[in-house]
Length: 417
Image (cartoon, rainbow, N blue to C red):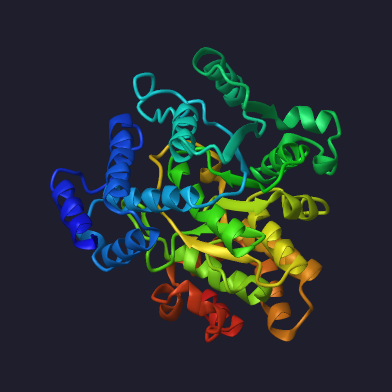
């Protein structure tokens, strides 16, 4: 059976581009078509997993379309075996997404992502009456009216009531409890909106309710949600997160690698070791039980891009080893002005230093790294990023849990050159 599937995939691979163009809806449809063919060929999840493992050893020989289709097939197959009722709430924030939310006919960067996300989740749950879903699109104070455009698209192209557009500005004005510490939308860069969306979703009590937040673009196909649901429903985890760093992960970032992210991971692991068994806190594909989400939302201090780490850290504090990290497939979205362009590893690290002082028992190493990070300037960070020590640049982020060979003194020496 596995050989039959490999023959099928090799044949299909011959006619496929290496990567995926997220503005091409035809290619996106092709991915789910191939996933359906895999499901027809493989009656068991373990068979798909065996193929996934084989493909991971020859990643460059297969199109991303094939890798993603295998992940989607596995995700859907897993859900077919779940007999309990499950409800999934999907949340994503939008900021300066007024171009990517359009179709490719209306803008070169148009991904039509709102419609595509609905199509993706409908494909995943198709014919499976045990699953229901809703979606919350949260405008993060976009000056280009992304939220208004999203509502217009829904009014014109979607006739169901399970997708809602929310506005963080309204929540702040109404003093909604979860964002009561925000004075205005400028104090949020995604984090405030995601937390508001999660809070809204969890106001309704549902059995086996899972909340999943993701990025606005189509970098990660929502059809992979079953991989996260699996860990929560079948393994009893309180959270499951997607990872771009695991052996069977396949994530393309056209044009460059990102050793700067490895430096970021190495440094945060020195500060908050409670969650150092995971690596990819910034993947943007995270799911929590609604029960856990209600516990971790209040009292957070990170409302910008480090919010992911605080939510995961609080999850771990409430229950040890309660987070599962899952290999996913995806691709960095086409260049367009979004909140991602405002992301700064240095800003996140400075907030993580604050998280260290709030949540982690003080220790000599943590104190030294936190003090070093607090005093870093933008120029310092740029110099470090250009001169990342080889053990970090060439290292596996999962090994940074135990590897701590690069000390503050080493980093200071780089800055002093």
